[in-house]
Image 1 (cartoon, rainbow, N blue to C red):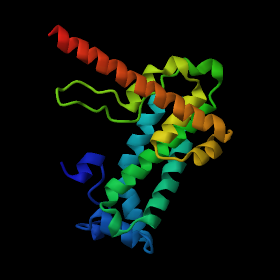
Image 2: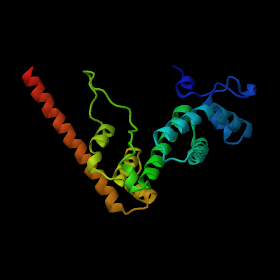
Image 3: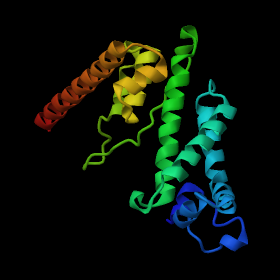
Image 4: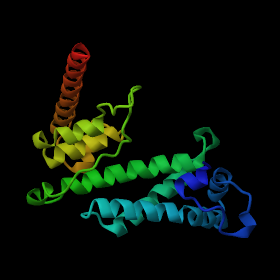
Length: 210
Protein backbone atom coordinates (compact mmCIF):
# COMPACT_ATOMS: atom_id res chain seq x y z
CA UNK A 1 0.00 0.00 0.00
CA UNK A 2 1.41 3.39 -0.95
CA UNK A 3 1.85 6.08 1.67
CA UNK A 4 -0.81 8.29 0.11
CA UNK A 5 -3.43 5.55 0.34
CA UNK A 6 -2.31 4.60 3.84
CA UNK A 7 -2.79 8.08 5.26
CA UNK A 8 -5.50 9.23 2.84
CA UNK A 9 -3.13 11.85 1.41
CA UNK A 10 -4.24 13.46 -1.83
CA UNK A 11 -2.14 12.78 -4.93
CA UNK A 12 -2.06 16.42 -6.00
CA UNK A 13 -4.30 19.46 -5.86
CA UNK A 14 -2.56 21.91 -8.19
CA UNK A 15 -1.60 20.28 -11.50
CA UNK A 16 1.64 22.26 -11.51
CA UNK A 17 2.79 20.03 -8.64
CA UNK A 18 1.87 16.79 -10.38
CA UNK A 19 4.62 14.24 -9.79
CA UNK A 20 6.16 16.12 -6.85
CA UNK A 21 6.11 13.90 -3.77
CA UNK A 22 5.21 15.22 -0.32
CA UNK A 23 8.76 15.12 1.02
CA UNK A 24 10.08 17.36 -1.76
CA UNK A 25 7.00 19.52 -1.48
CA UNK A 26 7.56 20.00 2.27
CA UNK A 27 11.10 21.24 1.68
CA UNK A 28 9.86 23.67 -0.95
CA UNK A 29 6.96 24.75 1.31
CA UNK A 30 9.41 26.29 3.78
CA UNK A 31 9.83 29.28 1.46
CA UNK A 32 7.18 28.85 -1.22
CA UNK A 33 3.54 29.63 -0.38
CA UNK A 34 1.98 27.83 -3.38
CA UNK A 35 3.90 24.70 -2.36
CA UNK A 36 2.64 25.04 1.20
CA UNK A 37 -0.94 25.46 -0.02
CA UNK A 38 -0.52 22.34 -2.15
CA UNK A 39 0.81 20.40 0.83
CA UNK A 40 -2.10 21.50 3.02
CA UNK A 41 -4.46 20.47 0.24
CA UNK A 42 -2.98 16.99 0.19
CA UNK A 43 -3.16 16.72 3.98
CA UNK A 44 -6.72 18.06 4.24
CA UNK A 45 -8.44 14.66 4.10
CA UNK A 46 -6.09 13.17 6.69
CA UNK A 47 -6.66 16.13 9.02
CA UNK A 48 -10.40 15.82 8.58
CA UNK A 49 -10.32 12.13 9.39
CA UNK A 50 -8.27 12.78 12.54
CA UNK A 51 -10.71 15.46 13.67
CA UNK A 52 -13.73 13.28 12.98
CA UNK A 53 -12.22 10.19 14.60
CA UNK A 54 -11.15 11.86 17.84
CA UNK A 55 -14.16 14.16 18.24
CA UNK A 56 -16.51 11.17 17.94
CA UNK A 57 -14.45 9.03 20.28
CA UNK A 58 -13.94 11.81 22.83
CA UNK A 59 -17.05 14.03 22.83
CA UNK A 60 -15.50 16.49 25.29
CA UNK A 61 -13.05 17.73 22.62
CA UNK A 62 -13.53 21.00 20.75
CA UNK A 63 -13.25 20.44 16.98
CA UNK A 64 -12.00 23.99 16.40
CA UNK A 65 -9.20 23.34 18.89
CA UNK A 66 -8.31 20.15 17.02
CA UNK A 67 -8.16 22.04 13.71
CA UNK A 68 -6.02 24.80 15.17
CA UNK A 69 -3.73 22.32 16.91
CA UNK A 70 -3.25 20.30 13.71
CA UNK A 71 -2.54 23.53 11.83
CA UNK A 72 0.19 24.52 14.32
CA UNK A 73 1.53 20.96 14.29
CA UNK A 74 1.73 20.98 10.51
CA UNK A 75 3.48 24.36 10.50
CA UNK A 76 6.06 23.06 12.99
CA UNK A 77 6.42 19.84 11.01
CA UNK A 78 7.15 21.72 7.80
CA UNK A 79 9.59 24.05 9.54
CA UNK A 80 11.43 21.17 11.21
CA UNK A 81 11.44 18.74 8.31
CA UNK A 82 14.67 17.66 6.64
CA UNK A 83 15.62 14.69 4.43
CA UNK A 84 17.30 13.13 7.48
CA UNK A 85 13.85 12.71 9.06
CA UNK A 86 12.83 10.30 6.30
CA UNK A 87 9.45 10.36 4.62
CA UNK A 88 7.47 13.54 5.29
CA UNK A 89 4.07 11.83 5.44
CA UNK A 90 5.24 9.41 8.13
CA UNK A 91 6.95 12.25 10.00
CA UNK A 92 3.82 14.39 9.86
CA UNK A 93 1.59 11.49 10.92
CA UNK A 94 3.80 10.82 13.94
CA UNK A 95 3.73 14.48 14.97
CA UNK A 96 -0.04 14.72 14.46
CA UNK A 97 -0.64 11.61 16.58
CA UNK A 98 1.62 12.99 19.32
CA UNK A 99 -0.37 16.24 19.32
CA UNK A 100 -3.68 14.37 19.56
CA UNK A 101 -2.42 12.25 22.45
CA UNK A 102 -1.35 15.33 24.38
CA UNK A 103 -4.53 17.26 23.55
CA UNK A 104 -6.87 14.44 24.58
CA UNK A 105 -4.95 13.84 27.80
CA UNK A 106 -4.97 17.53 28.70
CA UNK A 107 -8.67 17.93 27.86
CA UNK A 108 -9.58 14.76 29.77
CA UNK A 109 -7.79 15.97 32.88
CA UNK A 110 -10.10 19.00 32.95
CA UNK A 111 -13.36 17.08 32.51
CA UNK A 112 -15.59 17.39 35.54
CA UNK A 113 -14.82 14.58 37.98
CA UNK A 114 -18.47 13.54 38.12
CA UNK A 115 -18.51 12.91 34.36
CA UNK A 116 -15.15 11.18 34.00
CA UNK A 117 -16.53 7.74 34.81
CA UNK A 118 -19.02 8.12 31.96
CA UNK A 119 -16.22 8.56 29.41
CA UNK A 120 -14.29 5.59 28.09
CA UNK A 121 -10.62 6.53 27.93
CA UNK A 122 -9.52 4.70 24.78
CA UNK A 123 -5.96 3.56 24.22
CA UNK A 124 -3.64 5.14 21.67
CA UNK A 125 -1.34 2.21 20.95
CA UNK A 126 -1.75 -0.55 18.41
CA UNK A 127 -2.31 -3.82 20.27
CA UNK A 128 0.74 -6.05 20.09
CA UNK A 129 0.53 -9.74 19.28
CA UNK A 130 2.67 -12.60 20.47
CA UNK A 131 4.06 -15.34 18.24
CA UNK A 132 1.13 -17.64 19.05
CA UNK A 133 -1.35 -15.02 17.90
CA UNK A 134 -2.65 -14.06 21.34
CA UNK A 135 -2.67 -10.36 22.24
CA UNK A 136 0.06 -9.51 24.71
CA UNK A 137 -0.20 -7.18 27.68
CA UNK A 138 0.89 -3.76 26.51
CA UNK A 139 0.62 -0.35 28.24
CA UNK A 140 -2.68 0.49 26.57
CA UNK A 141 -4.31 -2.75 27.74
CA UNK A 142 -2.85 -2.32 31.21
CA UNK A 143 -4.13 1.25 31.34
CA UNK A 144 -7.65 -0.02 30.75
CA UNK A 145 -7.17 -2.79 33.31
CA UNK A 146 -6.14 -0.43 36.10
CA UNK A 147 -8.82 2.18 35.43
CA UNK A 148 -10.51 1.55 38.77
CA UNK A 149 -7.27 2.41 40.58
CA UNK A 150 -6.55 5.60 38.63
CA UNK A 151 -8.17 8.99 38.59
CA UNK A 152 -8.52 11.14 35.48
CA UNK A 153 -5.30 13.04 36.04
CA UNK A 154 -3.26 9.86 36.49
CA UNK A 155 -4.54 8.45 33.21
CA UNK A 156 -3.82 11.73 31.46
CA UNK A 157 -0.30 11.73 32.87
CA UNK A 158 0.35 8.22 31.64
CA UNK A 159 -0.91 8.93 28.12
CA UNK A 160 1.49 11.86 27.92
CA UNK A 161 4.24 9.57 29.23
CA UNK A 162 3.46 7.10 26.42
CA UNK A 163 3.61 9.98 23.96
CA UNK A 164 7.19 10.68 25.02
CA UNK A 165 6.73 13.80 27.14
CA UNK A 166 9.01 14.24 30.15
CA UNK A 167 7.63 14.49 33.68
CA UNK A 168 8.49 18.20 33.68
CA UNK A 169 6.67 18.82 30.38
CA UNK A 170 3.64 16.86 31.58
CA UNK A 171 3.43 18.78 34.85
CA UNK A 172 3.51 22.06 32.95
CA UNK A 173 0.87 20.93 30.43
CA UNK A 174 -1.52 19.67 33.12
CA UNK A 175 -0.74 22.54 35.50
CA UNK A 176 0.17 20.27 38.40
CA UNK A 177 3.13 19.49 40.64
CA UNK A 178 6.00 17.28 39.49
CA UNK A 179 5.68 14.77 42.36
CA UNK A 180 2.19 13.47 41.44
CA UNK A 181 3.30 13.13 37.80
CA UNK A 182 6.21 10.87 38.74
CA UNK A 183 4.04 9.00 41.24
CA UNK A 184 1.35 8.29 38.63
CA UNK A 185 3.89 6.94 36.14
CA UNK A 186 5.46 4.67 38.77
CA UNK A 187 2.04 3.50 39.94
CA UNK A 188 0.78 2.47 36.51
CA UNK A 189 4.10 0.92 35.50
CA UNK A 190 3.91 -1.12 38.69
CA UNK A 191 0.39 -2.28 37.75
CA UNK A 192 1.61 -3.21 34.26
CA UNK A 193 4.44 -5.28 35.71
CA UNK A 194 1.96 -7.02 38.01
CA UNK A 195 -0.31 -7.87 35.08
CA UNK A 196 2.61 -9.32 33.16
CA UNK A 197 3.59 -11.48 36.16
CA UNK A 198 0.00 -12.68 36.57
CA UNK A 199 -0.20 -13.60 32.92
CA UNK A 200 3.11 -15.48 33.11
CA UNK A 201 1.78 -17.50 36.04
CA UNK A 202 -1.46 -18.27 34.19
CA UNK A 203 0.51 -19.38 31.13
CA UNK A 204 2.70 -21.66 33.24
CA UNK A 205 -0.34 -23.23 34.93
CA UNK A 206 -2.00 -23.67 31.55
CA UNK A 207 1.06 -25.42 30.13
CA UNK A 208 1.16 -27.76 33.15
CA UNK A 209 -2.49 -28.66 32.66
CA UNK A 210 -1.81 -29.41 29.00
